[in-house]
Length: 144
Image 1 (tube, helix red, strand yellow):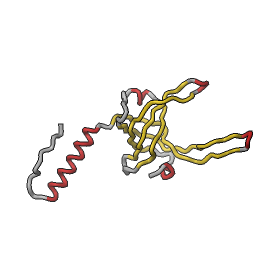
Image 2 (image 1 turned 180 degrees about the horizontal axis):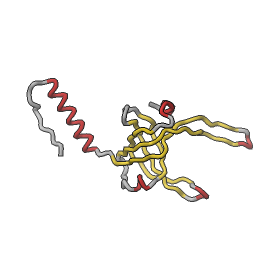
Image 3 (image 1 turned 120 degrees about the vertical axis):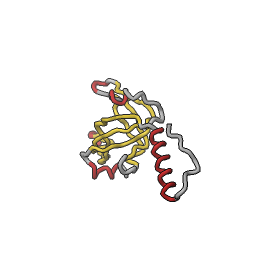
Image 4 (image 1 turned 90 degrees about the horizontal axis):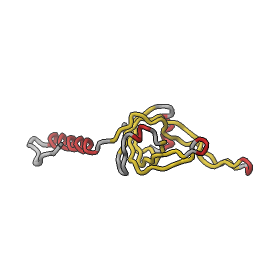
């Protein structure tokens, strides 16, 4: 799924997962500096499809409460919205804008627990093994 494919979910809330890369800043209201958070490899949790290679979010209290470190996976819900991206210079009669899609109003933020995902993966592997064989597995899974 690309950002343009997000159009079909316009206005709807969905669950996503991304990898925290770093903090940043941007100019906010009246020139105030506003903290931001960069997530990369953002995927739709339901379909597993990559939504975008990166997204910047405002560093809200929700993000701040997670204590994120580079490489942490974050799961969240967000609404799909559109916006005009590009460059405009009215005095030069330049308008190089185009419609794009983004995720807004992130909520229900949580760190995605990699050990839980590994345990789920191990469980699926064991189920597949047991379904294909009538014998006991030749290994023991450590799910602690």
